[in-house]
Image (cartoon, rainbow, N blue to C red; front, top):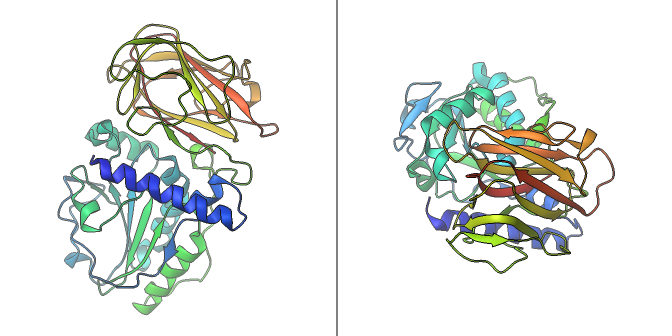
Length: 358
């Protein structure tokens, strides 16, 4: 993926955090939740979808062929937890309004190289219950046609094929759905005026934005921040954890190679330690070879997580890395405060890309 996409995404989140903090929201999480949502000032025609490299759940769709329908184009990539938290709403809208003139299209534009793998995309769409049409945008052609820079991002076109609304990030679901209802009504369709109700679980549950103090952080040297040791790029190096980590600092223990995107474990029993403040800890990881499994153990403040284990760990903190995806490792059940997270891998070859918190 072009570097500019990542840089734009992080710059946007940072700007949102700064401006919203000034409005006394006080948390990074609140900034991410309340990103831009507005009618387009200069409405334009729904861009071409012809750049899709493949379609899932549908034959190929075209902008011209969608005239007469209200169209929601939702940009996603399957490891993005911010998009995952929006998914219950997108699914519900697709189901509720599909017979009333709405077409939801998920444009899957990858962030990491492994998200271009069509088997991974098919697997993700199945397990995440994405059963509306998916345009596989592995060459970023649709992304560029929309001049998009963010995950998640939603664009809504009216029945005449004119873009009328866009939204970046999480939140503001009522406004999005009211726009769908209004455009359907303008096209001659009736809706009940009610808003969908969802019951998200696991990674789909919204972050606890009132307590979140830890931002997303990439681990590779290209964009990673907060590394507590002297970093050596692209070379096997033995690291150790400093005696003390400040909030949002992290460290490696064992022999690792820090690459531009991931950090890669070279020997068994290596660890990543992170000082965080939030309810949830999620980590995007990949096994050394597709299909291979890697055992890992998680601790919080030096102890097994118990009831605070994540969806992908048990009470003792044990888990198994099986696919290239986002893993939910911790969901705190007690007070949210500064804590120390540790994940140790029994086997070498693991690639760790990106921490997110909730």
